[in-house]
Image (cartoon, rainbow, N blue to C red; front, side):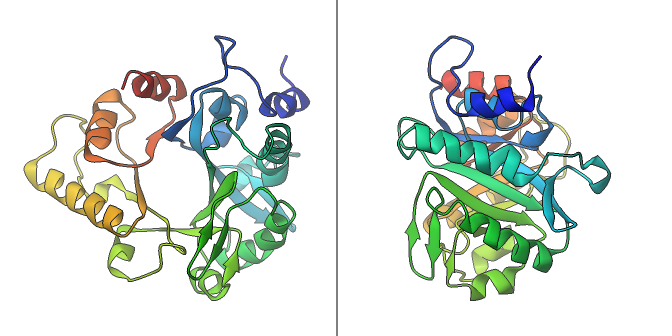
Length: 262
């Protein structure tokens, strides 16, 4: 039986099923990572370069759950993610993975934006030695890069000229002129590009719209991600060929195998 403490120590540097260190997959994003059997640990064993945690501020604590009713004792942002990551980074001499790849921790805020950011800011300060720092004109990349998604206190965050987290933008932000040091990643609903449910060939109009968005994001030195697309090799192939930076997946095995074959 795997306990929370076993998972914690496994996060320090577990080998994958083959007994080897996983190959870091910088394009792999563990969507709703906290819903896996072992949050964070499963993603790290698969070499994922990005993980996502939904967060609720309740009674002064930042709880990890998809909805408020799903909050469970002990499952906080600190206990499931920040503490094990800090321990792993210390063990690995300042890195999550041996090749120095920075792990993206996407914090998807579900509660009130302002109060959640005000609560999160001092929590992140406790882990500043491993976190990427953002200023008005500079990004100092570190072992873990925190990006705030969901309910975002945009004005409050932007006014903070020295932050331990950046903002997850939307496609509309590509025309906003915002600094890439404030919005290094743009994520949006795939339905903004294509409303079809099939993962077959994209219509020419959707393909052009997707390619234009990706090209614009990259010209601004931002990464791009889409959620809500089919979680299949066919869709991953479309995204990979087009240059999408983070490929969403609930199927960790499937995406890892897909990327390792490329």
